[in-house]
Length: 367
Image 1 (cartoon, rainbow, N blue to C red):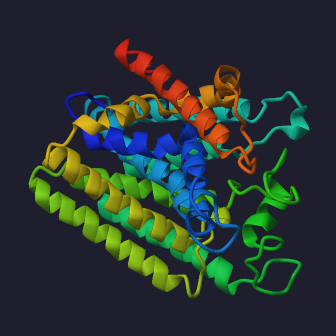
Image 2: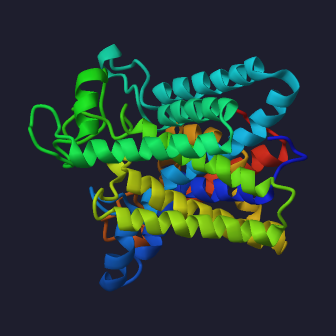
Image 3: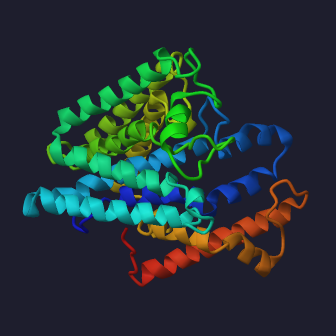
C-alpha cells in the first residue's frame, strides 16, 4: 500500500482484528472469568467459534481479515497495473501467494511429521489462495464483473449444499460428519486434515471459493473509500448501508442455508461481510472523518506487521514466557482466575512491546 494512499482506518481495522489473535482473546476470556456465571454464560461463547450452526464474535475474525486483505489488493495492484501492466501484477500476486502458503506449511509444523502429516490447507494457506484468486479477478474484471462472479459463486455453493445430495449418502446433508466440503476433501485433499475425525479440513478445497468472495468484498470497500467523487460522509453511509443489506440477506437466507463457518456457507459470507462493511464504516467515520486518532496507535503497531506477529506467536510461546515472569496459570478453567488474568495480560503486553519496537524502528516485514 503506497504511503500516499494509506488510509489509517484500514490499518487500525486490520490491527483490531489481529489483536484478538495475539493475546486479546485470552485477555478477554480472563476478564470475563472475573464476572459471575450469568455474564460468563453470555460472553464466553462469543470468544470461541460456534460448534456448527451459528455465529459468534470470534467467527468474525477470519473473514474480517479476508475482507481487509481484499482491501489491500486494490492499493497494491492498481499502481502496478497502470504503470507496469498485468505481468508485473501477476508477479506480485504469485510472490505473496508463495510466501503465505509456505509460511502456512511452516506454521503447522512443516514436514516434521513426514509428508503425510503436512497440513496443506491451514489459515495462512487459505489467505494465500484467496488472495491469489481475488487478485486475478481484480486484474481481469471490472466492478460489475466482480459482482456477477461473486453472486454466481455464492449461489452455486448454496444450490450445491441445499439441493444436491452428498455422494454415497443419497440425501442432502450439512452435518459435521457429512457435507460437500467433507466429501471433496476426503477424496482430493492429501495430508493432515483439521477437523474432528480427520476426514476433511475446515479450510479445505471447496469452501475456499466462498472464502474468496469474502476477500472480494474488501475490494468493493476500497472502491468506495477511493472514490474521489464521493464525500467522506457518503462513503460512511455507503459502507454502512451495504453492510446492513448483506447482513439482512444473510440472516434471511440462513433459513435455507444455515450460517456455518466450518464450511464457509454462503450466508456466513454475507453475515460476516455485512459486519465487516459496517465495522469499516465505523472505523473510517471515527478515525478519518472525525479525526479521533490518539487511541489507534496500538492497533497500528499490529496492523502494519500482522503476519509477522502471527508467526512469532507460533514460534515463541508468549504465554509460557509470561508464566516465567509472573507465575500464574495458562489454564482457563483453573480456579486461580487472577493468575490466569495476569499471565494473559503479560503475554499480550509482550506482543505489543515487540510490535512497538518494530514500528518505532520502521521494521515492516512485508509478505
